[in-house]
Length: 166
Length: 166
DNA sequence: CTGAATTTTCAGAAGTTTTTGAAAACAAAA
DNA sequence: TTTTGTTTTCAAAAACTTCTGAAAATTCAG
Image (cartoon, rainbow over all chains, first blue to last red; front, top):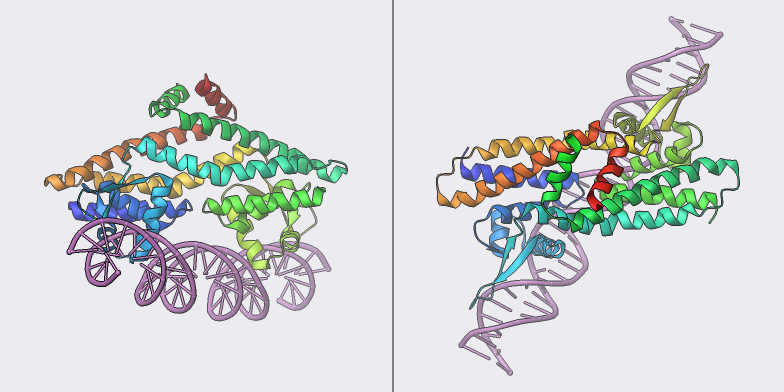
């Protein structure tokens, strides 16, 4: 396999995996492209390399900036913006956790809190309140774990792994 | 809020969250419905409750069985199949981990292995092989952690949490 | 077997998400 | 101020996913 083929394959499969995870395929491909680029790239280079339109490139670069997975670089004397990816995997994962926790886990917790206050009068509702209580407990634990995880450093992962298999 | 409103809200937001995670919204709603149902339900009851077609109900019940999140129950003297949800949250999460690890993480690991063997001749490919090596290390660690996690019991979560915030 | 109840399938319809590309907005240089 | 290079926006088109419903297949009791 040549380097070019390898890059191609990497970008493709990074995009595929991301779309399984509810993340736009193109956004992930742009990320992958910048991850393996030796130098920061312009929007035009991204468009050309991935064969996507200007609008698409712009939107996804913007989203990646917003997620903190890509950064801007301005070169002195140039008007074009250059983009480069955050390459530290631990930081990448942390940014994704922050973003998705806020967007997805927190609203769910809010609903669980609301719904837990249902008057459990009829016996028919027993099952409901019990399941909700259970999920609520679990989700709160997940939320706290994520909080701690986000604050921790790259070694945490290894530490937990060792702790777990021990 | 009445019990009925609560159930409604729960089903809706469970579906919403799932679709953020690349899981079919209806599949998650069927799961939510069965989670809070006091008794096993037939396909007809599911259809009626969620206002979906027979085909849709059938497909999603099938998928849930396949993911191990819902089980079948046959009642003596009845031809209809009854369905009930796996209610233990730890088991639910474990089943999801097993399924997604196989479908999503493992193919990525395979690609990373292949791609890591690219001949790093030109200096241009330095950046590529380095990033790939990094991601590969990280993903393998994640994979091992998941394996251990899948084998472990419900207390693991609490244990790790205590270990982490300590 | 036969026939009624039930489940499964799948082609086309409906719905949703992503992409395009041209026009508008913006920003720096002349 | 005007020109030129660059980024942003957004309505419409394309692509993709999910859902429907009727027909086919299956299952089981009689």
